[in-house]
Image (cartoon, rainbow, N blue to C red; front, top):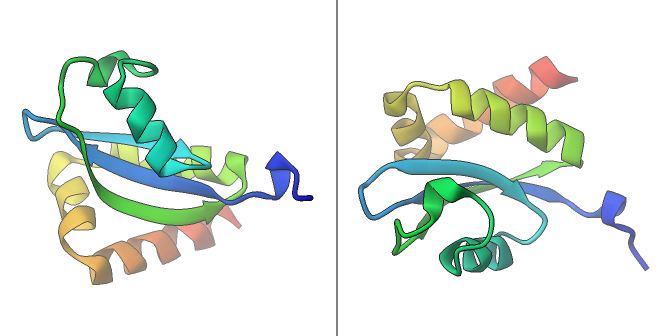
Length: 102
């Protein structure tokens, strides 16, 4: 049986009703977004639904996912929108980030 440390952590971006993007990490994105929709977790998402997952990427272990999440949160809004809009841009950006985290 796989332990939690063996599981893959995911980066996700959720679009709120006001079009803002929220960035998070989770082992199970679907369950985490359901928690957010139910008012559990981040205050930034409470009452801001409907919530739509607009981006996901498998990252790896929790520590790496937390570092990538922090980098995404530091991006300008336009760059976050590029992550969402262009899979090619997202692949290049994530590859660059992963090389930097090695």
